[in-house]
Length: 113
Length: 113
Image 1 (cartoon, helix red, strand yellow):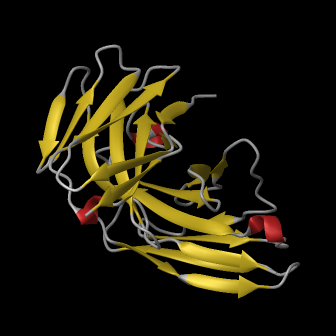
Image 2 (image 1 turned 60 degrees about the vertical axis):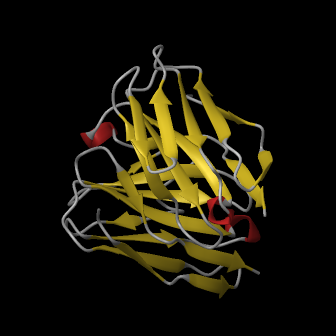
């Protein structure tokens, strides 16, 4: 299985600022995804990170708020822009090596004051 | 949209007991996956099921893909304290470009020593 590393693992941010989360996979993967997990809740898909093209966003999520990059087959970033306390969440990167089994990073725990 | 139903929200069992968790959907999935999430960690894949009726084991865990493709169950036998965590079911329509997962709300399992 792929090993997925996320940075930062946690951060405390001021409202109105932006934070970029990095996701590094130890092998090339076909698909990468970004999920959000609000406190005590399940995982909600934000977007599919497409290599070399714009991400595909799920309903309720927009590029201006959550810009995503995926410059190659092993790396992606998610930016949470103009943060508010409602953005306090765990943001999880996941990857699919092609067999349909998604593996997850340990998550980035964001607190917005 | 697709929804996965897991209930109850919490389960409390005695160490050594067996426990069964169900997951149902309003629509068909072609792959079912079960994940476990420990506090402060990302979800870890336990079992993946690819065919209706499939029964798969992983140590003390057994999971089945329902015949209707709208449900799955996970059994844990002879529970131990480290089984504590949140168990999520997830459904997937296909691999590749549609390999994104839809998650249930999760069941928090507590094991009394």
